[in-house]
Image (tube, rainbow, N blue to C red; front, side, top):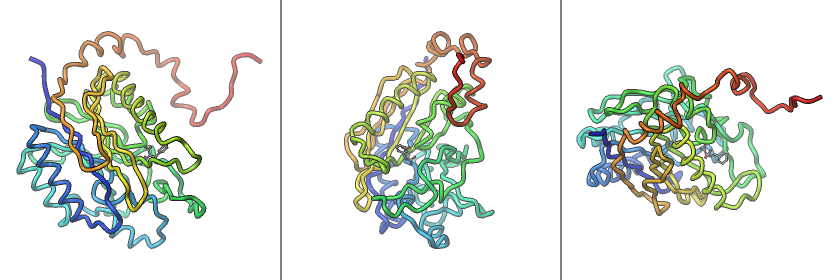
Length: 312
Ligand code: ING
């Protein structure tokens, strides 16, 4: 009998700057209850799930930014009701938030929490998109390089609800190396929350193209690493700035098993056969049999692309 796990993507609609953590927690609890009602045992929530996507704003008062948008402790008094409800319902979950450590370091973080309410693992976002300087001419900012440090915990997996689960956040899904490092550790399930602006900051990219990229990356990463993949959005118009939904549960075969249809609070569930990937891992993507790392050195040694042709 193969292992099954009923997984949910619990998508959040917009959280505005005026929305307190209490508003977010109330909606997160409603999503937990809906997912529970649908039979889900593991729920993936978005990146930065307790607040608006604040890196879109240039703010200079760091103390105010810390108070409004960062969590000094997880859970805190304000977020405790969410953690209590999940434990009461016996649901495991992934949730993203802005982490302010006791040493004063700031990360874009996600945690994996078991159905017993115990913290299983923590991940700090490695691939920070956007910029650190103020772009006053731009319609909005994308200041993840200003507000967060590069994650210092690496890409890891954990034994979790009878699976091997790894975590990523948003922009990580654009870098195949991140998924491969998890797959090389035996990942069978990857949880990823995202907040992706519909508009491109730099040039007038057709919005449909952004969604197309999101969907092909999710399907290829799941397939090429023979893992289940849950990618959950916070989306909709946050203070007028649009982010797209299209939260997905993708099978290791690369097929989309479930996808949200709105840019609001919405839950989709799928009863995942965790052993579905066994054939792929033993044949087509049998890493030990087929990979040739001796030819991959540039992937680790070189950061940016440099033209080094074989001919003179
Ligand atoms: N958001 C976006 C993402 O990677 C982005 C930022 C979008 C970068 C499109 C480049 C291109 O999906 C976050 N939060 O990483």
